[in-house]
Structures are given as C-alpha cells and as structure tokens.
Image (spheres, rainbow over the protein chains, first blue to last red):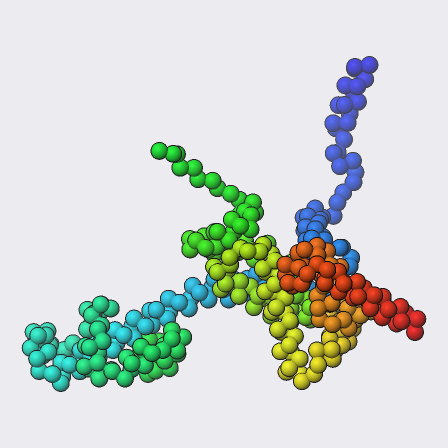
Length: 175
Length: 195
C-alpha cells in the first residue's frame, strides 16, 4: 500500500502544477488592482452599487498630487522667495543709500575714503552689508523715508505686493 | 534616569490624533499631511460630489477643502473628530460653491438643482440607469438640508450622531429630515414611474 502511495506521489510530482490550466498573461497583477479598486469603492461609496457616479481613471492619484502642489509645494517655493526678495531689496536700498551718502555727505566720504578711492559697485557694497546694518535712520537719511513708512504700515501681504510692484522687483528678479 | 524609548509606527497605524500631533511638528508636518490626504481625499471627494454633482466642480471644491485643511489644521482644537471636522469644511465649501454658482447664473437654488439633475443625463461620469437617474433627480429636488441628510444617511451610511456633529442639527431634527426626504423621494419616483 505504502509503495502504491509513493508511486502515485512520484507520478503526481511529475505532472505540471497547473494541471493544464493557464491564466492570461498579467492576470494576477490586474486582479490585485481590480480587487483593491473594488474594496476602495465599497469603502468610499457606502453601499456598493448604490452610487452611480464615476471619476476619470487615476483621478485620485492626480487629485492628491494637485493638492500637494498647492499646499506643501507652494509653501516650499513661495515663502523663501519672498523672504529672499525682501532681504535683497533692503540690501539694494542700503547699497544705494550708502552710495547716495557717499556722494552727498562729505563725512561719510572720510570714513570709507580708503575704499572709495577705487571703483565700488552697488553689488560689492551690498555683499558687505548684513541685514543688521539696515537701520531706519540710515535709510531715511538717504531719502527712503516715504518707502519705509509705507512698509511700516502695511500688512505682510500688502508689503509683498508693494515690493513686487516696485521698480526694485526688477532687481529682485535678476538676483 | 529613564531609558528613552522611541516608538516607530508605520504611517498607516497612526491614529488621527497622532496624525494631528505630527502635523503640528514642523519636521513631520508634510508627511502627516500626505497621510491625511491619502486617508481622506476619496471619502471627502464622494461627500462633495453628491452635493455639487459635477465631477469638475467636485474636483475644485475638494482641492479648496484640503488647502483650507493645510492652513487651519494647526488651529484644530480636537473638540471633534478629525473626519467630522474635514466633512464639515468640505460640506461648507460645497454649499458655498453652489451659492456662488447660483449667484453667477442668477437663478434660485431650486432651479440650479433642477439644472444639475438635467445635466446628469449627458454627464460622462454618471453611469446610472433610468431608475438611478430618477432617484438622483428626486434627491436633487429636496431642500438643501434634507438632501445633505439623505446623502449622509443613505449613501454614506453615517450614524445620526455623526451627522449631528457635522451639520450641528439635533438627532431628532435629523431623523425628521430623513423621514420627510424619504417620503418625498418615494412620492416623486412613484409618480414618474406611473407616467
């Protein structure tokens, strides 16, 4: 008896596992996707079969991507640009202010006289300035009082608007 | 000294409460938001779709909803559950959208809902048969509040307590709304079938 079973087993082992049945190529991959879709629909549409609304293929993937672009994506781009722009703009003002001071006020000329003997561009001055150098009195002396007042009274949004619509926006864009 | 134990959890295992906590921490904010999106965008979409009917409109409303969520979740005080809060924002956004649409077309909300029902016939993303179309049109003929309650109860299979948290209407009031809605729909469907 044992021998017969052993013979049968070895016979079975030699037969193809599928027993002659075949599945279309890629069937199980598609089945997985379909089952996942059906489960989603059952879960999200309440009772299966009750909803007759449809969405375009792969809609939810693109929906999530669109939302991420408008939230995480826009925050990552927008805020640094504004901050950077503001710093550059103020630095630009400071550089201009320094030049104006140098040209119109003799005493400043004495302080920076050594370096002013050569040609100094606005950019070079801007590089040397830090945001801490930009105080209101300094900029006001250079004729930027009105602009500073505008900035002081505006909310962040309006401030950004003012910055972006000013002539300085061109400098910011270049930078 | 107590040993510091760091517990790593798979994102899917995070409860809504944990998700909100992670959102409030800058380092984990983006990951938490992505998880929230994958967990709720579909549910919110279907909720909105049943209110505004048209797919493109639903798409706009859902995107606006989740942008608001991104902006406001930091201030969420957790006096309600996260999904209740999401549904409330989505419902308000969808209703506001219909109001704007109504205003831009210069018609009443009833006329707008009737239009939406008529447009379903040619809607690419509506695959219902004649009876299902009739049912949708009947639902669209209901006053706003009854329509919301009917959708949440019948399609979303929400409990009255959950609907109460979203709409701020008492359970008794919701039961009455649902009962009246069902009666009206029954009447409309029977009437149409007899003609």
